[in-house]
Structures are given as structure tokens and as C-alpha cells.
Image (cartoon, rainbow, N blue to C red; front, side, top):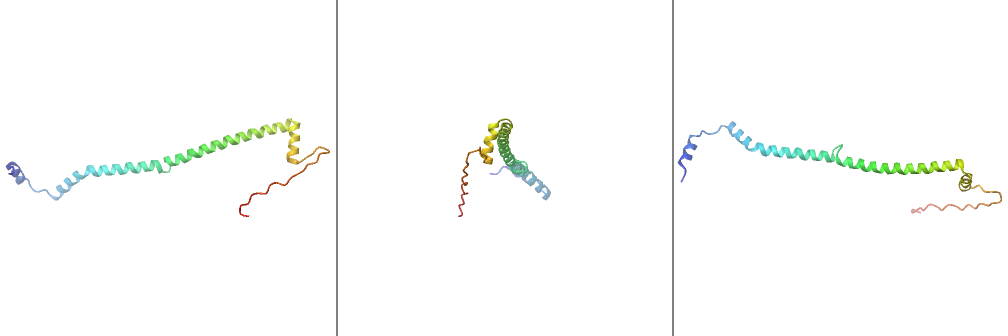
Length: 127
């Protein structure tokens, strides 16, 4: 039960040459191969965006470093402000000058005795 028109059509077709067979094969596989290449390029681009020289991972590291440096700057500015206030007090307040002389230089008023205790030794876990 074969179709007579199909048999006559197959009989009238001439066999394909090697070039024609290759072209038919290339047309059959062109789209899937192009899709695979496009997907591979997209994956490569994604990897580069995330892990490249200026990628997201580097950007996140730099952002964390920036936040840490900003905190350090704020801390140093506060410390600087406190030191400025202390300098201003030492320039203008005689009591602040006296307190500094007593604490740091171990000065005493006439008739006073200063007892200096030894500092605590450093804790050496190896000894």
C-alpha cells in the first residue's frame, strides 16, 4: 500500500551530490550550533561580569573596604576633635595643666608624696 505519486516522485528525483548533502546537513545543524555558541558566550560574559577584573566580586570587596575606611575616618576625626579640645584646655585652663603635670609627669605640690606602683606585667602565654 504505497502511494503511487510518492513512488513516482522518488523515482524522478536525482541523487544529491556531496556538496548538496553537506549544505543540507549544515542547514539542519546551523540553528542548534548557533544557539550553543550564543549560550556559551552569554555564560562567559556572565562569568566575566561577576569575577572579572572590575566584576561584582571586586566591586563588593572595594565597597566593604570603603565602608571600613569611612568608619576609620570618622573615628580619627572624633579622636582629632578630642585632642584639639584637650590642647585648647591645656592652653587656657590652669587646672588642666596641673592635672596633666600630676598624672603624666608625676609632679607634686610641696609637702605631697607620690607613690608609684609598678605596672602590671604583660601576660605571656608562652611562659
